[in-house]
Image (cartoon, rainbow over all chains, first blue to last red; front, side):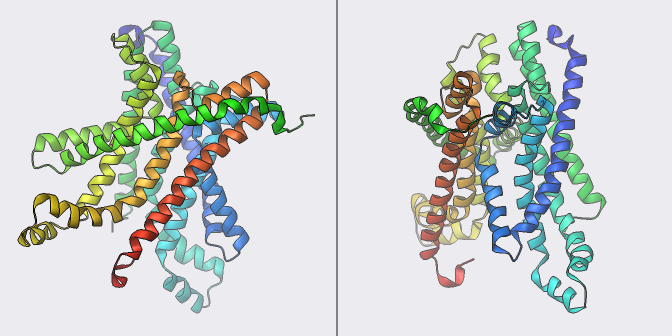
Length: 215
Length: 225
């Protein structure tokens, strides 16, 4: 155990990297997912179907394939040489955005047609309806589901290890190779992941309560 | 300039069926074993004994909050260091099963919890045996609730099985890596591999839709959602 613990600076740095990249992917995925989620509810059939295709596609491809595709696939074919960080962010964002699009869609649908119609009847413009009626309510519904997406993204970020991005899993494997202490190294990584996911659920619940989001 | 051509990797297609077979073998075994584990877990979580309930809860919480990749490495590398050497396919199967069992536990528990206690009592009052209560009252209703999340779970098992490639299981993902590394036709390899996974996932999606339609047909019109 102590042999593994001598690498604590690397492990701490890797933990922060894992947190940072999954947070980045959550935010980027949230932005893309919001657009896709709105497209899902569009009146235009082309938009609706493209959104469904996007969501289904990235939910049906293993993250591992996406990571490898963004790193090796783009580099060898389109000559877009992304760094492991950029490739991992891109792949994670694709996964997170397909998850977030469903969260956003469900949240908007939860507001109910009656409210939208009532707002329109009050002479609000469509954008005002969204800005003042739909979005403020939808955001509340999204908090628990978005917390779940953050946890999924954090867990999926471990797959970035296969393209050599130095996050927690990759660093753990390096420590394992250096020290030969596989069990201890992986156990520490597991405990860190548990601590992170618990912290996220706890924070999510805190946000929900703080803003009186509990129904 | 790069020329996209699927023919460039045509010579590798002969090995694809075996890779798909390995992916399917791993996924189906995981689903079956995960179901067994999930039934046990759900019984624990709904048990009257606090110790069993706690055990079930700890299991679910641990496995659902750990990345699958870490579980796979723990079983394969971690246990080997402790002197327990397990083959790569078996390691992947154990890790995937542990992971799937946790999610299965929650799905089944949700199904059980949705059925009111009064129904058990009413069925009992009709002089039904325990087996009959489950066969005619509990399972038919439970299945209607769990078939949708169950389908999602099956999809994530198939996708998750791709992680077995990191410890050398020769599945579709490994095929993709081999083709890419040997021919440098990464894009073609990824597209074919991606198409296989998307087809498998959408096949599960489709059968879920069909099951759902068949289930609703036998439901009283008033009870339809």
